[in-house]
Amino acid sequence: MESGHSVVRTRGPFDGKFTFTAHEAGDHSICLSAASSSSANTHIKLYLDIVVGSTRPNIEQDRSHVSSLSSKIRDLNSKLDDIRREQQYQREREAAYRDLSEDTNSRAVWYSVLQIGVLVATCVWQLRHLKASRAFSLASTSLCD
Image (spheres, rainbow, N blue to C red):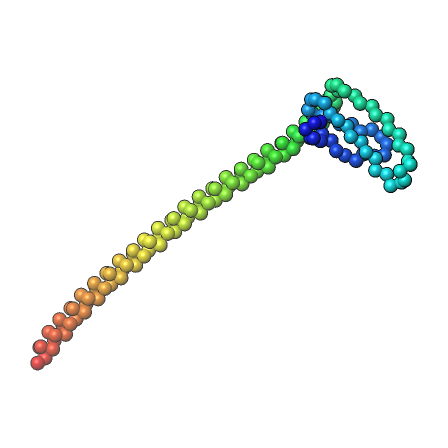
């Protein structure tokens, strides 16, 4: 093609058929070259048969290609469903862990508040007891004198 775009570039066998389909319309150029390790006097026979026009589609090959693609798509969808289920399971586990952590933290706060309350009550009781015992001690010393 004039644009320089290569449709097919390949090294084929020494004999046999080579087929390709151009997916673009327009004029195409065919360039052939022979790579030979022998001398330059070697003769090469080349038979070129070019079929231009629409070809008959290979329905069986298309079906097998579509069925292989559909099986791959089913496999991918199955894997995607597995990933979604795993993500949902992980979300549920994370929510349960978060709830458990919040419950544990609230219990720890209430336990600390209870400890502070017991400490304050003990402090008040000790202060009253020391005042009463000091007053009793002062009263008993004044009676002894």
